[in-house]
Image 1: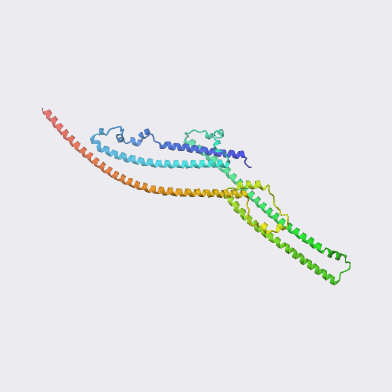
Image 2: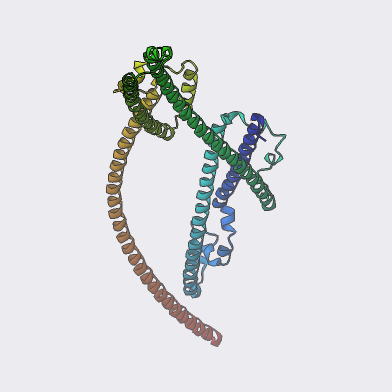
Length: 441
């Protein structure tokens, strides 16, 4: 049972709507991933990692606490806590970088799938001859309830939609496989019919050749009958048996007539055989040319245009049959010196050749431009590599200098703490002495 045009259009609309739903789901997933990449300031402040290090309240331009409020006895402990927090934050940043790269990779895959579905949808619409701009959810919103979904879908809903889409995709693939099988069977029937038509044409050609040979033989027999008519009449009029000499003469005449008949038949058969060989050679030549032209048309996808042109012009022409008998034996007419081709096919192939030449020239120009771009990028890459190496060296120097300065500042801070402790101890001892003196008084 063949599908009607309305059913095929309906199936195409269903397939396009499914692709639109998948694209919308992918866009929502993409937007969700992008929203996850954006980290707000309150969320950053509520990070459990930062909350586990109260020492970070002393950091930043707008710190919650001032470093001046730290007691001198806790300076060393504060510095060690700073080191631990820095290591934990660096490790957390590394993990976040890995997660960010994974999210970007997923985002790239989703964008790739989105592009593939968009191309597939456009290709299906082009093959069906439908303008995709006029196929909107409003035109068939009542038939597809899955299009009326919210932008914020849960995981269960997404799984349900995924199962429905997979089921519909499987059904579409099954229908497409059945159609492909039907098309293959029709193609096989068409090929068989073409082969049968070719065999019928060959049989018709053989029949025409045999009819022509029979007509020639009948004409030769008629000529021989006319030539032997007088002898037959003379033999019929003779009632008495012929004498030996006359009988020998008649037998000799009969033998001569048979020899003349064979010579005449051979003279007429040789041109016929030559014509048949020429026709076979011409058929083989035309078959080879037809295969070459057919291969070129299929390669350039021009078979439909050629079939349309040939079918429109074929009904206007009939098979030309030579009127004179001599034209049937002209080898130059059977195998012409100059080959010919249909003007429509020649124009199509010429247009395709010019188009191919233009495409080749454009590709050559683009290849040269890409080579120039590659050369420029190579130069730029070398310059950037030099700058990167220089920056790495500078960063190494800065890191070593920073480490040295940090260590020196730490040593100075510890030394200052020791001095302050000794100073406070001296003050405490002096205060105790003063209290003792005051008590004595």
